[in-house]
Image 1 (cartoon, rainbow, N blue to C red):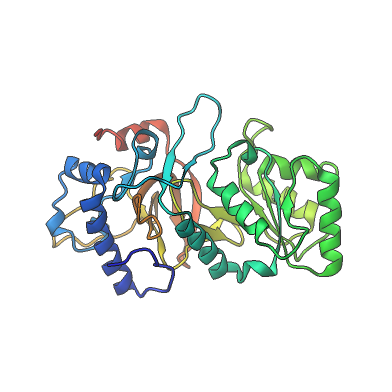
Image 2: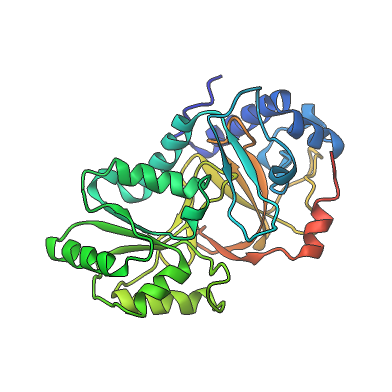
Length: 331
Protein backbone atom coordinates (compact mmCIF):
# COMPACT_ATOMS: atom_id res chain seq x y z
CA UNK A 1 0.00 0.00 0.00
CA UNK A 2 1.30 3.45 -0.93
CA UNK A 3 1.08 5.77 2.09
CA UNK A 4 2.71 8.84 0.45
CA UNK A 5 -0.46 10.54 -0.83
CA UNK A 6 -3.09 10.68 1.92
CA UNK A 7 -4.10 14.27 1.11
CA UNK A 8 -7.74 13.71 0.22
CA UNK A 9 -11.11 13.24 1.96
CA UNK A 10 -11.83 10.10 4.01
CA UNK A 11 -15.06 8.70 5.34
CA UNK A 12 -14.89 7.57 8.98
CA UNK A 13 -14.66 3.95 7.87
CA UNK A 14 -11.94 4.74 5.31
CA UNK A 15 -9.98 6.77 7.85
CA UNK A 16 -9.99 3.95 10.39
CA UNK A 17 -8.99 1.33 7.81
CA UNK A 18 -6.14 3.54 6.56
CA UNK A 19 -4.97 4.22 10.12
CA UNK A 20 -4.92 0.52 11.00
CA UNK A 21 -2.94 -0.33 7.85
CA UNK A 22 -0.49 2.49 8.56
CA UNK A 23 -0.12 1.35 12.18
CA UNK A 24 0.89 -2.16 11.10
CA UNK A 25 3.32 -0.73 8.51
CA UNK A 26 4.98 1.47 11.12
CA UNK A 27 5.01 -1.25 13.77
CA UNK A 28 6.86 -3.53 11.34
CA UNK A 29 9.28 -0.88 10.03
CA UNK A 30 9.94 1.52 12.93
CA UNK A 31 12.35 0.08 15.48
CA UNK A 32 11.57 2.63 18.20
CA UNK A 33 7.79 2.49 17.78
CA UNK A 34 7.84 -1.32 17.76
CA UNK A 35 9.93 -1.40 20.95
CA UNK A 36 7.51 1.06 22.60
CA UNK A 37 4.47 -1.04 21.64
CA UNK A 38 6.15 -4.23 22.82
CA UNK A 39 7.24 -2.50 26.03
CA UNK A 40 3.63 -1.73 26.97
CA UNK A 41 2.57 -5.26 25.91
CA UNK A 42 0.35 -4.30 23.00
CA UNK A 43 -1.42 -7.33 21.48
CA UNK A 44 -0.77 -6.18 17.91
CA UNK A 45 -2.86 -8.90 16.29
CA UNK A 46 -5.92 -7.78 18.33
CA UNK A 47 -5.90 -4.11 17.31
CA UNK A 48 -9.04 -3.47 15.29
CA UNK A 49 -10.00 0.13 16.11
CA UNK A 50 -8.31 3.53 16.24
CA UNK A 51 -8.69 3.84 20.02
CA UNK A 52 -6.60 0.68 20.43
CA UNK A 53 -3.59 2.06 18.52
CA UNK A 54 -0.73 3.07 20.86
CA UNK A 55 0.33 6.72 20.61
CA UNK A 56 4.06 7.36 20.95
CA UNK A 57 4.90 10.05 23.57
CA UNK A 58 6.17 13.11 21.72
CA UNK A 59 9.16 13.26 24.09
CA UNK A 60 10.65 10.25 22.26
CA UNK A 61 11.60 12.67 19.46
CA UNK A 62 14.07 14.21 21.94
CA UNK A 63 15.82 10.95 22.77
CA UNK A 64 15.51 8.70 19.71
CA UNK A 65 15.67 8.81 15.92
CA UNK A 66 12.06 8.18 14.95
CA UNK A 67 12.27 6.58 11.51
CA UNK A 68 9.97 4.23 9.65
CA UNK A 69 12.14 2.27 7.20
CA UNK A 70 15.87 3.05 7.04
CA UNK A 71 16.75 6.26 5.17
CA UNK A 72 19.17 9.16 5.01
CA UNK A 73 17.12 12.27 5.83
CA UNK A 74 16.99 15.18 3.40
CA UNK A 75 16.87 17.42 6.48
CA UNK A 76 16.20 17.21 10.22
CA UNK A 77 13.70 19.62 11.73
CA UNK A 78 14.36 20.83 15.29
CA UNK A 79 11.91 22.24 17.82
CA UNK A 80 12.38 25.75 19.14
CA UNK A 81 13.26 26.30 22.79
CA UNK A 82 15.32 28.28 25.22
CA UNK A 83 19.05 27.75 25.71
CA UNK A 84 19.84 24.55 27.58
CA UNK A 85 16.57 22.82 26.67
CA UNK A 86 16.58 19.43 25.00
CA UNK A 87 15.35 19.72 21.42
CA UNK A 88 13.04 17.44 19.49
CA UNK A 89 14.47 16.18 16.21
CA UNK A 90 12.38 14.98 13.28
CA UNK A 91 14.33 13.30 10.44
CA UNK A 92 12.60 14.07 7.13
CA UNK A 93 12.91 11.45 4.42
CA UNK A 94 11.18 13.58 1.78
CA UNK A 95 10.87 17.36 1.78
CA UNK A 96 8.49 16.98 -1.16
CA UNK A 97 6.15 15.04 1.15
CA UNK A 98 6.32 17.82 3.75
CA UNK A 99 5.63 20.46 1.10
CA UNK A 100 2.65 18.46 -0.14
CA UNK A 101 1.40 18.20 3.45
CA UNK A 102 1.54 21.89 4.37
CA UNK A 103 0.32 23.09 0.96
CA UNK A 104 -2.60 20.66 1.07
CA UNK A 105 -3.45 21.72 4.65
CA UNK A 106 -3.30 25.40 3.72
CA UNK A 107 -5.38 24.94 0.58
CA UNK A 108 -8.00 22.95 2.48
CA UNK A 109 -8.65 25.89 4.83
CA UNK A 110 -7.66 29.00 2.85
CA UNK A 111 -7.60 28.17 -0.85
CA UNK A 112 -4.81 28.63 -3.36
CA UNK A 113 -1.61 29.99 -1.72
CA UNK A 114 -0.79 31.88 -4.93
CA UNK A 115 -3.72 34.23 -4.20
CA UNK A 116 -1.93 35.67 -1.14
CA UNK A 117 0.90 37.96 -0.20
CA UNK A 118 2.76 36.35 2.73
CA UNK A 119 4.44 38.59 5.31
CA UNK A 120 6.45 36.91 8.09
CA UNK A 121 7.35 38.74 11.30
CA UNK A 122 9.28 35.86 12.87
CA UNK A 123 12.65 37.17 14.13
CA UNK A 124 13.18 34.50 16.78
CA UNK A 125 12.26 31.61 14.48
CA UNK A 126 14.93 32.74 12.04
CA UNK A 127 17.44 31.94 14.78
CA UNK A 128 16.46 28.26 14.31
CA UNK A 129 17.58 27.37 10.81
CA UNK A 130 16.06 23.89 11.22
CA UNK A 131 12.54 25.16 11.98
CA UNK A 132 9.74 23.45 10.07
CA UNK A 133 7.73 26.70 10.29
CA UNK A 134 10.55 28.71 8.70
CA UNK A 135 10.85 26.10 5.94
CA UNK A 136 7.11 26.39 5.27
CA UNK A 137 7.12 30.20 5.29
CA UNK A 138 10.22 30.34 3.11
CA UNK A 139 8.55 28.04 0.57
CA UNK A 140 5.33 30.10 0.54
CA UNK A 141 7.27 33.36 0.16
CA UNK A 142 9.66 32.12 -2.53
CA UNK A 143 6.80 30.65 -4.56
CA UNK A 144 4.53 33.67 -4.14
CA UNK A 145 3.82 35.58 -7.38
CA UNK A 146 3.95 38.84 -5.39
CA UNK A 147 7.29 40.60 -4.86
CA UNK A 148 5.94 42.12 -1.64
CA UNK A 149 5.99 38.72 0.11
CA UNK A 150 8.91 38.41 2.49
CA UNK A 151 10.42 38.11 5.95
CA UNK A 152 10.56 41.12 8.25
CA UNK A 153 12.95 41.03 11.19
CA UNK A 154 12.84 44.33 13.07
CA UNK A 155 12.18 46.63 10.09
CA UNK A 156 8.73 47.59 11.30
CA UNK A 157 8.52 50.68 9.11
CA UNK A 158 8.85 48.61 5.94
CA UNK A 159 6.23 46.17 7.21
CA UNK A 160 3.82 49.02 7.95
CA UNK A 161 4.31 50.49 4.46
CA UNK A 162 3.73 47.08 2.87
CA UNK A 163 0.54 46.50 4.85
CA UNK A 164 -0.81 49.91 3.88
CA UNK A 165 0.00 49.21 0.22
CA UNK A 166 -1.74 45.81 0.33
CA UNK A 167 -4.81 47.37 1.92
CA UNK A 168 -4.95 50.07 -0.75
CA UNK A 169 -4.60 47.45 -3.51
CA UNK A 170 -7.29 45.22 -1.98
CA UNK A 171 -4.79 42.37 -2.06
CA UNK A 172 -5.35 39.17 -0.04
CA UNK A 173 -2.63 39.26 2.61
CA UNK A 174 -1.50 36.96 5.41
CA UNK A 175 0.73 38.16 8.26
CA UNK A 176 2.47 35.45 10.30
CA UNK A 177 3.88 36.87 13.50
CA UNK A 178 5.38 35.62 16.73
CA UNK A 179 3.61 37.18 19.73
CA UNK A 180 6.33 39.46 21.08
CA UNK A 181 7.17 40.77 17.57
CA UNK A 182 3.53 41.61 16.80
CA UNK A 183 3.21 43.48 20.11
CA UNK A 184 6.51 45.30 19.50
CA UNK A 185 5.25 46.35 16.05
CA UNK A 186 1.97 47.64 17.50
CA UNK A 187 3.82 49.87 19.96
CA UNK A 188 4.86 52.04 16.98
CA UNK A 189 2.26 51.35 14.27
CA UNK A 190 -1.44 50.65 13.99
CA UNK A 191 -3.81 50.32 11.06
CA UNK A 192 -7.36 49.36 10.16
CA UNK A 193 -7.13 46.40 7.78
CA UNK A 194 -10.13 44.13 8.49
CA UNK A 195 -9.44 41.91 5.45
CA UNK A 196 -5.94 41.05 6.73
CA UNK A 197 -5.45 37.48 7.99
CA UNK A 198 -3.20 37.52 11.05
CA UNK A 199 -1.58 34.35 12.37
CA UNK A 200 -0.25 34.65 15.91
CA UNK A 201 2.25 31.84 16.38
CA UNK A 202 2.53 32.14 20.17
CA UNK A 203 5.46 32.49 22.49
CA UNK A 204 7.07 35.44 24.22
CA UNK A 205 10.42 33.58 24.39
CA UNK A 206 11.46 35.62 27.43
CA UNK A 207 11.18 38.88 25.47
CA UNK A 208 8.05 40.15 27.24
CA UNK A 209 5.96 39.52 30.30
CA UNK A 210 3.64 36.58 29.64
CA UNK A 211 -0.03 37.53 29.26
CA UNK A 212 -3.04 35.35 28.52
CA UNK A 213 -3.85 34.52 24.90
CA UNK A 214 -7.24 36.26 24.99
CA UNK A 215 -5.58 39.52 26.03
CA UNK A 216 -2.90 39.14 23.35
CA UNK A 217 -5.54 38.57 20.67
CA UNK A 218 -7.58 41.57 21.83
CA UNK A 219 -4.49 43.82 21.57
CA UNK A 220 -3.65 42.57 18.07
CA UNK A 221 -7.24 42.84 16.87
CA UNK A 222 -7.46 46.42 18.07
CA UNK A 223 -4.05 47.40 16.72
CA UNK A 224 -4.54 45.93 13.23
CA UNK A 225 -8.29 46.42 12.93
CA UNK A 226 -9.00 42.74 12.29
CA UNK A 227 -12.12 40.88 13.50
CA UNK A 228 -10.36 37.67 14.53
CA UNK A 229 -6.92 36.15 15.06
CA UNK A 230 -5.97 32.96 13.26
CA UNK A 231 -3.65 30.28 14.62
CA UNK A 232 -1.81 27.24 13.31
CA UNK A 233 -1.43 24.14 15.46
CA UNK A 234 1.68 22.35 14.34
CA UNK A 235 5.00 21.15 15.69
CA UNK A 236 8.29 19.90 14.36
CA UNK A 237 7.16 16.32 15.12
CA UNK A 238 4.21 16.63 12.70
CA UNK A 239 4.11 17.33 8.96
CA UNK A 240 0.46 18.48 8.79
CA UNK A 241 -1.19 21.42 10.55
CA UNK A 242 -4.54 22.14 12.17
CA UNK A 243 -5.91 25.67 11.81
CA UNK A 244 -8.04 28.03 13.88
CA UNK A 245 -9.83 30.95 12.26
CA UNK A 246 -11.11 32.37 15.56
CA UNK A 247 -11.25 31.88 19.32
CA UNK A 248 -8.45 29.29 19.50
CA UNK A 249 -10.80 26.60 18.09
CA UNK A 250 -8.98 24.22 15.75
CA UNK A 251 -10.04 22.03 12.85
CA UNK A 252 -7.93 19.38 11.15
CA UNK A 253 -7.64 18.47 7.46
CA UNK A 254 -9.15 15.10 6.48
CA UNK A 255 -5.85 13.18 6.83
CA UNK A 256 -5.28 14.37 10.39
CA UNK A 257 -7.29 13.77 13.55
CA UNK A 258 -7.14 15.00 17.14
CA UNK A 259 -8.32 12.51 19.77
CA UNK A 260 -8.55 13.41 23.45
CA UNK A 261 -7.20 10.90 25.95
CA UNK A 262 -7.76 10.54 29.67
CA UNK A 263 -4.59 11.83 31.33
CA UNK A 264 -4.91 9.14 34.01
CA UNK A 265 -5.29 6.27 31.51
CA UNK A 266 -2.67 6.78 28.79
CA UNK A 267 -2.58 3.10 27.73
CA UNK A 268 -5.30 1.87 25.32
CA UNK A 269 -7.81 -0.85 26.17
CA UNK A 270 -7.81 -4.02 24.04
CA UNK A 271 -10.92 -5.86 25.15
CA UNK A 272 -13.23 -6.51 22.20
CA UNK A 273 -16.17 -5.68 24.48
CA UNK A 274 -14.78 -2.28 25.51
CA UNK A 275 -16.63 0.71 24.05
CA UNK A 276 -14.38 3.76 23.87
CA UNK A 277 -15.83 7.14 24.82
CA UNK A 278 -13.72 10.23 24.24
CA UNK A 279 -13.50 12.48 27.30
CA UNK A 280 -14.88 16.02 27.03
CA UNK A 281 -11.40 17.31 27.88
CA UNK A 282 -8.00 15.71 28.25
CA UNK A 283 -4.54 15.33 26.76
CA UNK A 284 -4.21 15.50 22.99
CA UNK A 285 -3.35 12.56 20.75
CA UNK A 286 -2.77 13.27 17.08
CA UNK A 287 -3.00 11.07 14.02
CA UNK A 288 -1.14 12.55 11.05
CA UNK A 289 -1.05 10.38 7.94
CA UNK A 290 1.70 12.62 6.49
CA UNK A 291 4.09 11.25 9.16
CA UNK A 292 4.43 8.02 7.21
CA UNK A 293 8.23 7.86 7.63
CA UNK A 294 8.35 8.79 11.33
CA UNK A 295 5.29 7.99 13.46
CA UNK A 296 1.71 8.93 12.62
CA UNK A 297 0.37 8.35 16.15
CA UNK A 298 1.68 10.96 18.59
CA UNK A 299 0.72 11.53 22.23
CA UNK A 300 1.40 15.24 22.74
CA UNK A 301 1.93 17.10 26.00
CA UNK A 302 -0.89 19.54 25.20
CA UNK A 303 -4.32 19.66 26.80
CA UNK A 304 -7.59 20.42 25.05
CA UNK A 305 -11.34 20.14 25.05
CA UNK A 306 -13.84 19.50 22.28
CA UNK A 307 -16.80 21.83 21.87
CA UNK A 308 -20.28 20.87 20.72
CA UNK A 309 -19.34 21.56 17.08
CA UNK A 310 -16.42 19.14 17.23
CA UNK A 311 -13.73 21.84 17.26
CA UNK A 312 -10.75 21.53 19.61
CA UNK A 313 -9.69 24.27 22.00
CA UNK A 314 -6.07 24.09 23.17
CA UNK A 315 -6.25 24.76 26.91
CA UNK A 316 -2.67 24.36 28.11
CA UNK A 317 0.17 21.93 28.75
CA UNK A 318 0.50 18.91 31.00
CA UNK A 319 2.50 19.61 34.15
CA UNK A 320 5.83 17.91 34.82
CA UNK A 321 4.42 15.41 37.33
CA UNK A 322 1.84 14.14 34.88
CA UNK A 323 4.45 14.02 32.12
CA UNK A 324 6.72 11.84 34.23
CA UNK A 325 3.82 9.46 34.77
CA UNK A 326 3.22 9.17 31.03
CA UNK A 327 6.89 8.67 30.15
CA UNK A 328 7.97 5.93 32.53
CA UNK A 329 8.36 3.47 29.66
CA UNK A 330 11.99 3.76 28.54
CA UNK A 331 13.43 1.85 25.62
